[in-house]
Length: 262
Ligand code: ADP
Image (cartoon, rainbow, N blue to C red; front, side, top):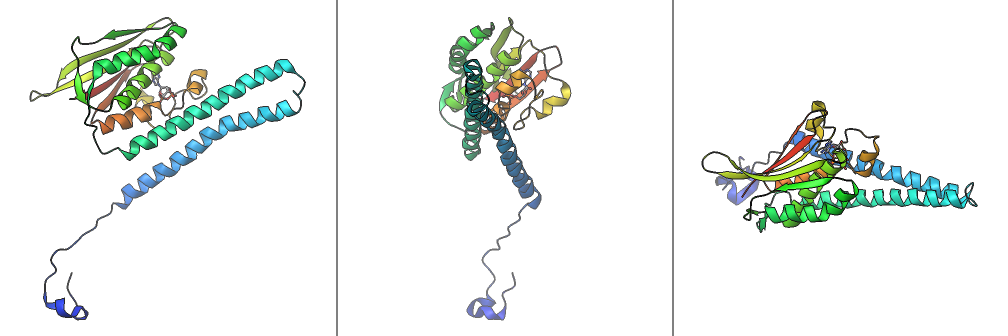
């Protein structure tokens, strides 16, 4: 900055500092694009069950007014659609809450073994309904790391729920926690959730954590999910400076690994 004569008294002095603001317009545009895409996708996902609800209400008011058998069937579908809208809204809110805190690593001391056991207890009934068994392989002593217990439970619950959902019926889901040497004496923990279901084709693997990305959009299993589970997992792990690895091949099941340090 060259001070001009109009700056009077200060004109002979050199500026104390120069502030340079460099804005990466490309990055700004990319983020803006992501936000608008997200709003568009979220609206579309919410509109689908809403359209179905409206359609059933109209049918119940008109053609099916006196058909009690049809009414019971329609009401139960309407309840499912309302549940789907609730899950979507819960996940959208969850994602935006995590994004707000994205840059701060949580500092509370939490026990990863306890988090896995809690998840096992919470999902036990669902596993039994689906005729699946969750098998745990955990160290005997607590594994303490810095983290947010509720968020890490959300991670393990999402991964185990997916393994139950996409694993094959009557099979097991293996959950293990092992230590990993990271070089220079640094130790990380690897939490692995493995299922023995259909697996995932390689072209889908890089996109799994995108919001609303589903491999088989039309399958009834995919309809039960929101397509936001793994996006939430990824955001929580980023905040914990942790990583998500996926190993899978069609017909060979899938293993989701969380690599997290103390
Ligand atoms: P959803 O709510 O649809 O389960 P997620 O974000 O949790 O959404 O997962 C995204 C997609 O990744 C799923 O729709 C499914 O196609 C695929 N996926 C996730 N976990 C598994 C798994 N264990 N085995 C096979 N496919 C999986």
